[in-house]
Length: 237
Image: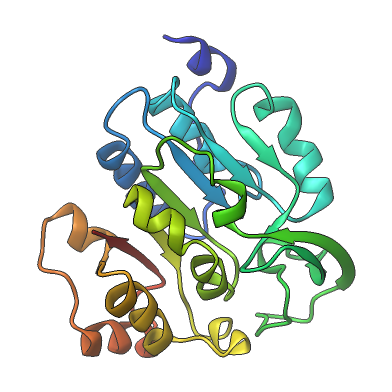
C-alpha cells in the first residue's frame, strides 16, 4: 500500500449519480492514466471523488483540480492541496469574474446559469473568479485525461482549451445532458463542431471506448443526447 492509499483508503461510489457510471469513469481512469506519472485534470471536482482515484492510479503525476464553490474548495484543501494543483476558480473561456448560481440544496447542480432542477431548490447567487484551461495549463508538461462536469457549460470549457488540446492530445470525459446544455446555447451540434470538426477528435460512450467500438457518427451522438440514453461521453484523438 503506497502513501496515497494509506491517506485516502478505498474509494466509495455511493456518492455518484449512478453506481454504474462511477465504475465506468474509474475504468477509464485506469486505462488512460497508464503510468504513475500520468496527469489528470478535474474540472468541477466537487468533493474530489475522482481525484482520489487518480492519485491512487498515478501517485507521481501532475494533477489539477478546479472547484468554483468556495466552501467545497475549502473542504478539498486538507485532503488534496499537498498532492494536486488546486484552484478555487470557475473554468470557462475567459479570464475575469462572473455571477454563479450556488444551489445550496443540491450543490452538484450549481453553475453559471440556472438550469432544469428535479425539485424546488435553494439558489444563492455568488461571484466567482473565472479563467480558461489554456491560461491556467499553459506551462503543463503533459495532460493525459480531463474530466468535465460543469452542468451545461462544457462547450465553454473546451472552447477555452483549444491550444492545450492541440498541444497535449488528452482524452476528455464530459457530461452533456438536456436540461442543462441548452441554457448555454449548447448541444450535440455545437459539441460535434468543436470536438470533431475543429479538433479532429472522436466521440464515444464510456462503454464503447472501453470495448473498443467504433466512434459515433454525428447522428448517433445527437440521438443519444436527445433520448437521454447517455449523459457521459469520452472524446479522444
